Image 1 (tube, rainbow, N blue to C red):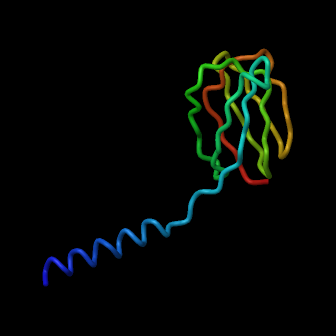
Image 2 (cartoon, rainbow, N blue to C red):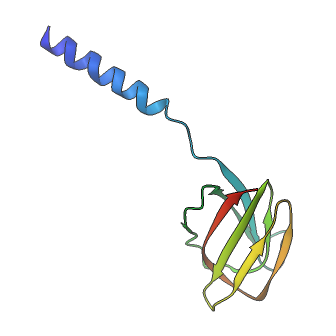
Length: 104
């Protein structure tokens, strides 16, 4: 009986954890040169939390594919602001180290 109660409690807890709402995010594409070959895409949370990017690609353009305002920090000191559904140049091109987005 005790084993059944523990198993039932664990099953209930697992159901509650899996039912927790996911943090909304926006798809952001980081484009290098040439942009059709050198790029990566991340789903950045739109709650303002800082996201580390961990990709060494030198970025020339940032594309926000959703309803968010995003802000990115480059390895050489760039700060790039990208609005909803915009493509913005990074100048000069550089590796992006982190960023955050807020729902618009």
